[in-house]
Length: 260
Image (cartoon, one colour):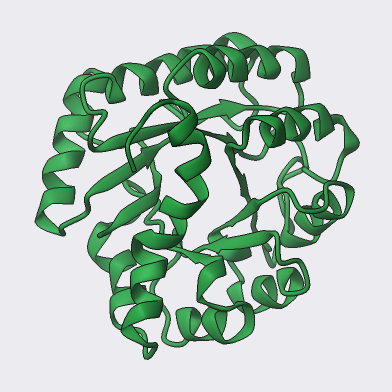
């Protein structure tokens, strides 16, 4: 069972959301990826306006509309526009099929302005995915690092959070989030490097590591190789490749009447 946490429509061949998701599922089938989680439409926008957030969420809603057995969606929201983001959460999650939120680089998650968004997601028991990175040249002004994420975790103890990309510089990212059991790490979005998954399992435990690919920016093959080629027990691989994400999403899926 492979569930991919981290998928994008941007960059996939096709003129429409429906064409793009069909092509993506063709690629997924080659690698036995059973379920895909999509967020953000196209083009990628570092600081989308409320109208652009809504438009991109509409693209994802359309893409997953005929593939409920294979595709799930996270709402793209921004702490720069709290009221509008809360409205998107109600539209796309409470009253729609989506099961989580995606936060990118418009505003750092360490800023308290994001708190109403996190509080509402906690009430709904939805997944919260925060892009994180540690850049040698310095992050973008609104780009969060794992240090920003642990500040958010400190304000919201017990709320499950996902550290996107494990911070990019994964050796630092793993150590930064290690004391915070509510934070899981996403394996996607950087080249497969020997030892990454092994270190994450050793330092965090297999229950806190979730496979994601970041397609189409990366390939399924290269990203699956991080887990399938890791020197860890088969049971840990099963958790990372699908079990942990399924467990995280089970409360919201059951609330929507989806059999898991």
